[in-house]
Image 1 (cartoon, rainbow, N blue to C red):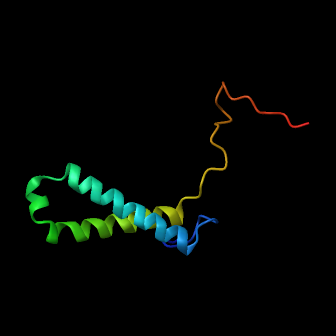
Image 2: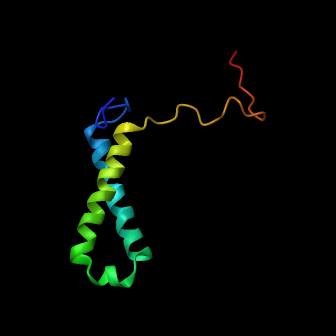
Image 3: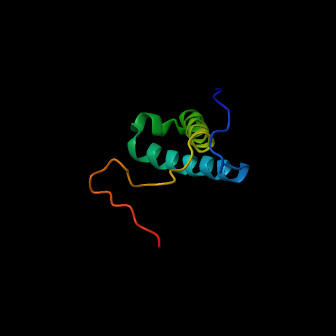
Length: 85
């Protein structure tokens, strides 16, 4: 089991790059809304490493975590399976 071992069978290079781009966009929004003004004023130094970290984490998440096939929990008491005839 390696960190870069592909565990999501549906992950492709395109999906990983799109996930990294989504991570960068979310990182920019988070940076502008939640970082201290001191860090925002020094954005040429603080923003690139932050966006790189966001892109790597998002791409790695896309590569590693497979999508759920079923959203319903079979152990949930309110879960009622549908019958196909």
